[in-house]
Amino acid sequence: MRGDPVDVGSTNVQQIRRFCARTQRPDVHSPHFASFLLAQYEVPIGGEKSISFEYSGVYKSFEYFDPTNDPYITQPGYWLQNARVALKLDKWELSGYVRNLANKYYRVDAFDSIEPFGYVQPNWGPPRTYGFEVRYRF
Image 1 (cartoon, rainbow, N blue to C red):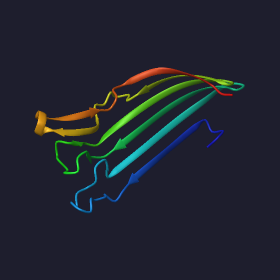
Image 2: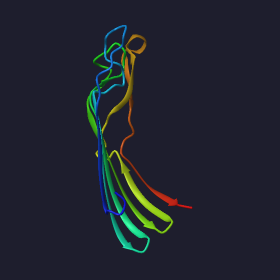
Image 3: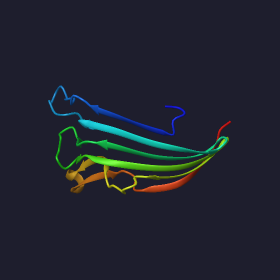
Image 4: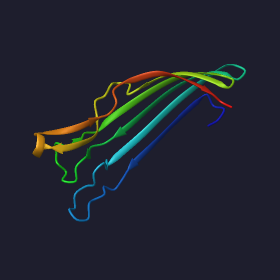
């Protein structure tokens, strides 16, 4: 709600698991449950100036990465958390952020390379990252 110093929101999605028509197996990249949480607190410090604190989290449940539903090519459920602090000065905004706050190791995909190479090749999500942003609003 605009004008309120605190914003809290969430979205939860529980889907009916989709199945491949030919194999009757669950579709790939199709978690059964996903959730998004957001909390933001803004403190006015005079005029058009304020400090904003933000926390967000995303949860995804177990999912398969392979159409054969190979148990080695999966991702168990996991949480990702992010945080951000911003100083708003009229049209300028200076902020610092941390993504993947808990430095969670998680797969965004995986490939079956057993036949040619003898291993499963995971593609890992980004580790904890942090940085600063500067914005100017016209």
